[in-house]
Each structure stands twice: as C-alpha cells, then as structure tokens.
Amino acid sequence: MRPNIVVFLTDDHGPWAANCFGTAELRTPALDSLVSNGIYFRNAYTTSPVCSPARASFWTGMYPSQHGIHDWIDEKRFPKKWLPERIPTLASLLHDGGYRTGFVGKWHCGQSWMHQPGFDFYIGENKDQYPHRGQCKFHDNGRDVTYVGQRSEFLTSRAIDFLSDTSDKRPVFLFVGLTDTHSPFSDHPQHLVDYYAANPLKSVKVEKYTGKATRLPGKMPAPAEHERRMAQYAAAVETIDQCVGRVLDHLTAIGTANDTAVLYTGDHGHMNGHHGLYYKGNGTIPQNFFDESIRVPCVWRMPGLLGGGSKSQSWVNHCDQFETILGMAGVSPRLNSASYPGVSLLPFLNGMPETPRDTAICEYGNARMIRTSKLKVINRLGVGLLDEVYDIANDPRETTNVINQVRGRDDHKSAMKGLADHFRNYSSDGFDGFLNQLPNHNGGEPWSAVSPS
Image (cartoon, rainbow, N blue to C red; front, side, top):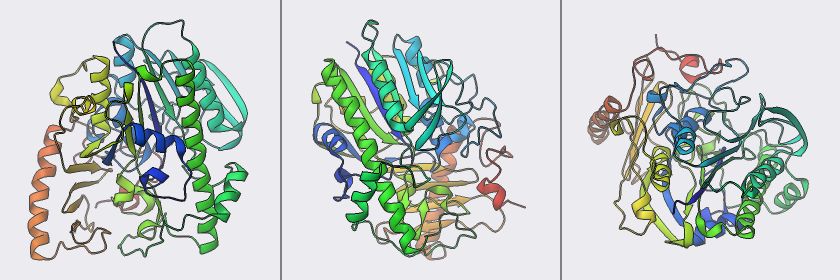
C-alpha cells in the first residue's frame, strides 16, 4: 500500500530555529514531536540559498544550472513561465502516478497566481506573499479570494479541507508552503510577540561580521531593532509550529496518521545575527554560503513511526527529497535517471543501514560552493571576485579565508575538480550559471550588482 505524503516546506526557517533544533527558548511542540517520532537529518542542505531556485530544485529534482532559475523571482515584474515544460515536476509525476495532489502556500517558481500543472487542488499566492496578517489574497482553485486575518491560518485550514475529502480513494500528496518566518518581521500574533519580547532567544548570539562583501543588504540593525525582529521571528516560528500541529492532529482525527509519511523542511536557512548578518545568501553582495544560509531543517516521520527518534548524519538536499518521495509513491521520473543528482533516502527511512555521505554542493547564480566535514570552498565567476576557502574543522564560524595559504591552495584545486565534475554532469544548455548570461529575475540579482567585466 502506497503511503499518503504530506510535505511542509517553509520559507527562511533557520536550521537552528526550534526547540528540537537547539534553541531551547522556542516553544515548538509539534516539531519536537516530529523529531521524537521521526528521523532527523542533522546535515540537510539547500541547493541554493535563496527562495525560487531552491523550491524549483525540490519540484524538479535538479540543480539551478539544470532547471534555469538562479535567483528569487519578482513574479509581478517577470510574469513568465519559468520552469521548462520538458522537465516534469514532482506534482505532475505523482498525479500521473495515481496520487490526489494538493498544494497550499508559496510556489514562487513563476506565475504563482495560476493553477499549476499536476495539482488537483491548488491554493497559491495571488501576486504577493504578504502581509502575514491583514488582507491576504490567494488564487483558490480558479477563484481569486481575499482572506482577512492571519495568512498561515487560512492556508492551514485549506490544507485540512483537502485532507478531509476522503471520498477519493487515491493516496494523497499534500504540500504546505508557509512563509511566516520570511521578512517582513511584523504582523505575527501579538500575544506570541509579547511572550518572546519578555523571553528573548538568549542562546542566539550576535556575531561580528568578518567578511569582505561590497554591500550588506543583511547588515545588522541597531540592538533595539534586532530585539524587535527576534521577537517577531520567534513568534513566526511558533505560529508555524501551531499550523503543523493542526495538520498532524487532523491526520490523527481522520485515522490516516499511521498511513502518512510527513516531511518537514525549508527552502534554505536564515541568519538572525549569525556571522553578524540577517537573511540568507543574498544578505551580502557578493552572495554568501554561510552554514546558516545553506543548511535547512529536515525531519521525516514515517508511517507506523518507523525509525522514530533516530538521527541521521548523512548529508542530504532537496534533490534527494524528490527521489525519496517518488520512491515512496512507486513512481519513476520521465527523464533519464542520469539527469537527476539526488539519491533516494527511502532505504534508510525503511530501516536499512545508512550509506553516509559528507559533501554538499550549492550554487547561486555566478557563485558555487562545495562543503565537506573539513572544508568549504566557494568559487566565483567575475573579474575581481575572490574565491574563498574555509578550514571548517578548525574554523567552524568561517572567519578566515585561507586561500592564500599552502593548504588552502591545495584544497581549492581539489574542490575545483569536484565542482567541475558535478556541473559537467548536472547542467543544461542555456541554464548553466557559469556559461550563460543569466536572465533578470528581480532587477537586483547579485551577479548584476557585482557584474563580471
């Protein structure tokens, strides 16, 4: 029997931002329960530390240099279809494979206000993902609707509506894309903001920025503003946790919890004073690949609580989730398997011994990164843009670029070969971030702000 599958993929949710992820001041009972009863992947990474390309990787199982989205998309300014029609999405594959497919929340891969292919049920953002509370506009299965209230409450209620339709006997795939943890840091439930203003996240330390960026969109604000933002961000985390709890409770109430695999993850990470910055990869120009930008929360809860309470050390990313979900569903991708860089986690989730991996590769436009347990190397395309090498084993906070040291030069040479081999296999004509003139996505792309000459 194929399982139901529910995916929560949130926006800007830092890999540190839950009680079970190490921030003890946060009240996150639903996420804590997922970790206690599921399998927690401590080394989960994004393919790109910014919204749209990371989400496109989840839906296609491919890197940005394969699917062509390299930065966040201003969908109002660039309202085209971004994903190539030749690349089937996870939704289309599951739908054609016999699943009833539902979507609520953030799409952000182009034309979010249109009912995306492959979904039986689709609630998307209508031109904007803001405000968090107020007059919130959606595309709801062919109708433009306005909900007055908390955005995530509406989306969670509609997710529950989708799950409540048990007349259709097909297995269910549901995607819930909540955005509470994305800026602006405002309009979250006041009682939660007041609680965290009185009980701040003291374990989240503000660090000094030691990099050499030419611009800092994520520059640390004044202390009072930082405290205000942190109370709002913590309230957003707890709000998401409450929404997750509502969905999980509903699965129990309708008797399908034991038949449902649940994934909680994020599109990329978030910095809240980490490294002396806010935001993610675009918190600096040139773009950064700090661990808090590229790491994501990742927990699987399997039917029957198989493997509950265990922790994986293997390094995984969104492309692996694509393969894992298809494997659960018994569905094969339409393209040649060599096109897909991901590896299914299903054998491990089903109780087989883990095959550990310890390498992460990310890209963001004209910059690429490879990270292992011992080092991180960043390769940048453009005159005047310097590569970086960090001795992660001895400098985990990435404070000193050692590229000009002998070991750093050797590590850089070896990493360049690893990156070249990866993108030789996983890039497509016209989409490779290093070989092509990248299109405008929002008018402020990092490769435009610091352009090669």
